[in-house]
Image (cartoon, rainbow, N blue to C red; front, top):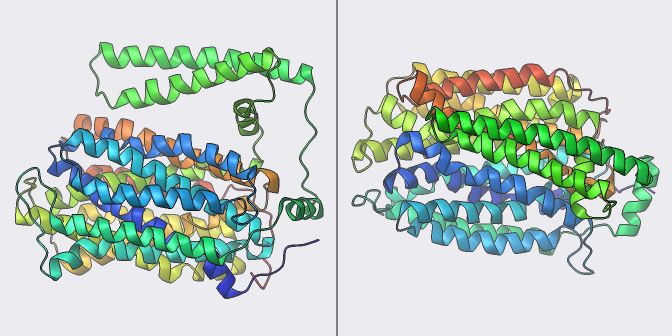
Length: 509
């Protein structure tokens, strides 16, 4: 039994929800730093305020993936209940976020908004892997990239469009401009409508059908390990957890004792120490024969993830470190390096901030335009070589901003963003296409959630160290964060050539 080949409009319908999801993400990425600065945040404090977004994804996505693998509703299926719940919550958060009265409230709303978007987004990746045969995976993820590009383009241009039709783009100190507020309202409505379209227009295979496909692919889940295996594995987790926790606590003390930048606590206390504690808990549970808990399953499946996934992890790390540096620092970099201002109430600052929105819009529309060219290039060469070329183009695009000093439309809004847009289209499709074919169907959602670790961890690292690097070595000039990001993306491109992607891309892909 094999999955049937889907038609163009069927793939369109199952991907359409990403239009709304990406409108939410794009509004967040292009405007949250602006909101934070408007509410009084200093440039060096912006990364730590952004930490809510990746930390939320780190927690939410594998949990949602784990439970969606085990969900079946007779009308809504496996993934669609999560699409719907996340869309409702995210839409409400988008309406509230631009009305944040103070900085701490905005930081909290970012946490809630990002968690809601992640609930809706995570199952979409598994949705493609569930519904499409292997030869259509690249096309399916390319369709998602198309909608991501279109949605992000529209959302990123919304504040500029609001200004064009006469809605105020400036406001008194500490007040978010109406152009931003109305943009978030439109994005909230679009998010819900687009996801509803996918929920109502798509179908899913039943658990019995998925089991038959699994047997056809000859990718079977291994039998449950013995009690001795769990005890030995528990000891290994326990020892690793102790060592990691000690390293995290010692690193935290060094940051505290030498009064280093507080952002580093995210890395030492939040990532290393909590990771060690998670290993400790897993070890204790397994040694005590508590092997049926979801937490133990999650930790052990993470330990035994496929080889291709481990190789892609490094590619994802350096790719998303670069993207996060861009999302955090693009607004302060453009307004300070090119527009020569840090005054958030000035027309120059808000003009530059709107231009950042246009830049983000442009790289997304470029991504939409090239989304369906990447599968063609991958068929002529290979998926990993295509990804290499795209990431190098993105890295050069980011680095080019350092050399731009005049705020012309072409040199700022288009020239650097061509490379970034090509990289973005590839990042959103090719790694997932390479990964999906190597995953067991009964753990597709979970492993797609775990794969998000390699998106989230680099963002946490970026939030932890970029502020420290920029303040310590680059005199608080945010343009240097974009240079670091460009180098990181080129490294990711080189690493993509090492991925063991042996899946054949058929002619009808």
